[in-house]
Image (cartoon, one colour):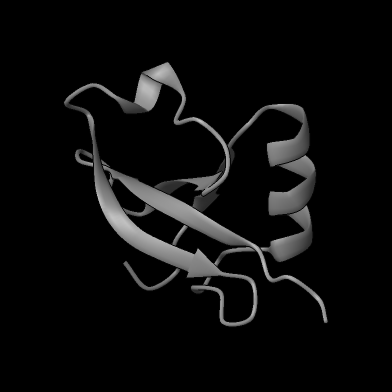
Length: 74
């Protein structure tokens, strides 16, 4: 059975279409912890939000710890 990835998604307050996804098993980056970002929900690779690319998210989070993307339906 394949384990599906789940990500905590944060939205930039001043630019709501800009999102940052962090795997739930990883720490939230320091730049997200300020007032400029707010929690926007959870993304699952089985049913990702518009604009979220699962493969890119896996690659980015393995290297940088987070994945930035633009939500297409913000």
